[in-house]
Length: 345
Image (cartoon, rainbow, N blue to C red; front, top):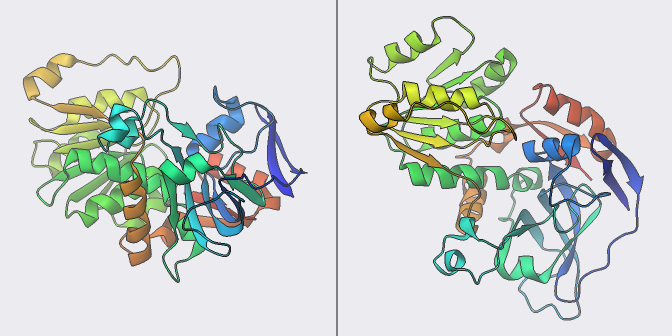
């Protein structure tokens, strides 16, 4: 089969590799589409502690069941359309038992602990089917849209924890694909939405998600503009949808008294200790949270929102390319010329 193989950090190519065998208790999925994620970009550039090279990445997958294992006892059958997100929970730790799967202490992932979906076929192990995020695609749903149900799942988890409502003014720092998802979800919750970025191309791309205000963070009066549209109070909610330590510092400084701040974007190694003024957190009475991952319920809700059109996946996907053009799509995503690139296999 065809697959994109990462041989070493920064070195990847389309190769012909052996088609995987269907696991006894799992299924073999014929991949239709696979989205390119920010974490894929980081792993392609720098590797990952859980990825043994050479490796096939890709964890935003949709496809059709090609084969079921001889000991498979699940509900899916050959021909079924599935949306695959990577999380494989243990189902046994206190967090899984308590329904907080995003905190699973033994979580593994497809495209890390098992081969991923930048290939014509991917195996779905029994563990993922038993306690993972594998879902049936709703009838008549666009399969390219189904493939990208995973990133909104994490955003849904964050906004659920933030309790965003129509009373809130929400500032999203970062206008990339994750920022655009946060725009759409916050607007669906009725909030007034502000977005800011240092990349003017990204700001232009996010316009179709119709934020109420969009700001160029490099302009000298950015802070004054934010205070002006928030009646000098600052935003009630701020989400840092980028990997910049400066944005975390800024979020604490800009947040309204009694406001909520979510550090959504993780920071690079060596830059994860920004100089935060914790007195601002103390005296402004801020609630500062970190969010990452999601539970199965978030993935199911993401699929429903995409299928209903409340989450406009067609706007999020700016490029659909054949897997043969993987390097072109990689460059578009790396250079900020695309929101979401999805590859057809």
